[in-house]
Image (cartoon, rainbow, N blue to C red; front, side, top):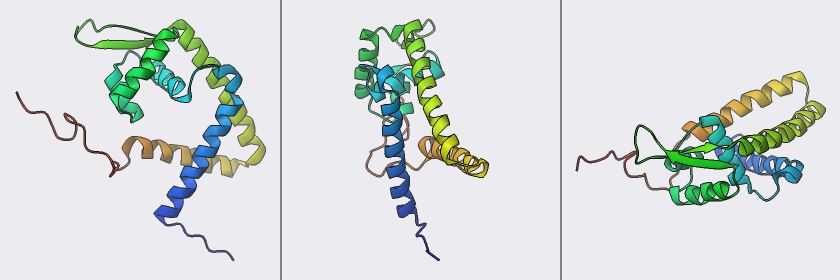
Length: 167
């Protein structure tokens, strides 16, 4: 009987490779609808729709990217008419980003296409017990993305982990 190495490094390598392959396949399956928008732009649009009015900084934190990169993504979405921004009524210094009706429609169509393909794929290659394993794995992947240990390659952001000084 074959013995597998379930060390953290081996699991991480297998998981990363599987996620990259699955993400590429999902993109390919929905590519006709995706049109000119990049995957990060579409994921940001989905986050804006899910979160409701939000700021560029909050989006950058949620997507684990630099605020400058997120600002570029949001600018492209604005130019395409998929999102709009307006001043926060309670704090005029803040600009809130929201999805437009067109942005919501495109996101819904893409989500439906991706999920339709993925549901068919899951149904064709799994049994009920395996689907339960996939469900559990999806929950663990969300937990890793949201609560995993900080990257050793990144310095803590000012004002977050280090705390802000009082002037």
